[in-house]
Image 1 (tube, each protein chain N blue to C red):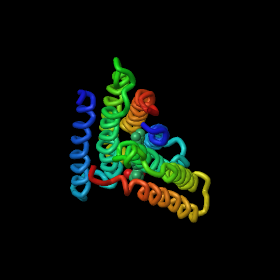
Image 2 (image 1 turned 90 degrees about the vertical axis):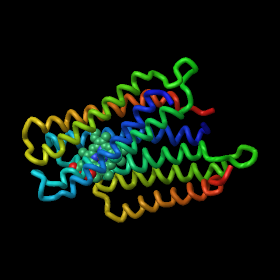
Image 3 (image 1 turned 180 degrees about the vertical axis):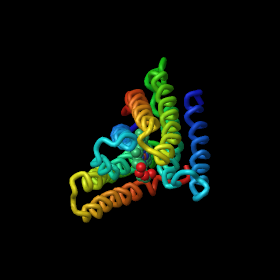
Image 4 (image 1 turned 120 degrees about the vertical axis):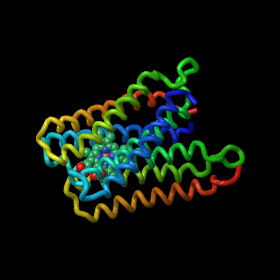
Length: 132
Length: 137
Ligand code: HEM
């Protein structure tokens, strides 16, 4: 597995842990409420698991197993490094909004970061999706 | 395909069907003795944890680089424990959520706490065992 994929997969496993931890705290709080502010963790729970775990894992594994170019190259890795970095920045931007009562415009920033990550990844993976 | 992988994948398929069944029941509206909206998290998590996540975890168990020649999937007991904890935890939630919505403040509130602990432990055990298999080659 290339270094980039190993990083993405490890990060995604960490997000799985983080997302499950936040989810478990929210679920326990739903059973026996102990702190109403815990509901402010819901956006973090969703972004950690959907973007941090599922999507990041898919990017990491796709970069590893998609057909390579002649000579074994996986294309411009910097694009995927960029995608992973922006994705993570986006996740934390979105997660911090309700936690720290940030203005709603930050959601646009977070989603733009995640969207740009998608564009970077798609542009890099596109050429590798072909008949082998 | 090793038996542990088959268990993850087949259970994921069953959860997929179960989730869509819950989605169906949710739309029975007035017939239910509790608010159908209490089934939304059940539907969603049967789908995302029971189906999507469990399928991903099963495939990862299968295709991540081998831990070693003797123990290709690391300490397999950890992955089995994760499988049991995740699924029991999820099913306990599926029962606990509507009961909690029907009438909270009763003994079944603890079902949600039990479910939270089981799923959380399942997640941890899975990651502990998978972590060592993510390596650069
Ligand atoms: C990949 C796994 C998961 C994903 C993608 C996910 C995603 C979501 C999403 C989108 C919501 C909002 C929709 C809704 O309220 O139903 C949500 C809510 C919630 N999740 Fe998760 N979740 C995951 C796993 C978990 C786990 C493992 C737990 C607990 C141990 C958990 C606990 C909760 C709780 C308590 C809520 C709030 C439900 C409510 O509104 O009453 N989630 N999750």
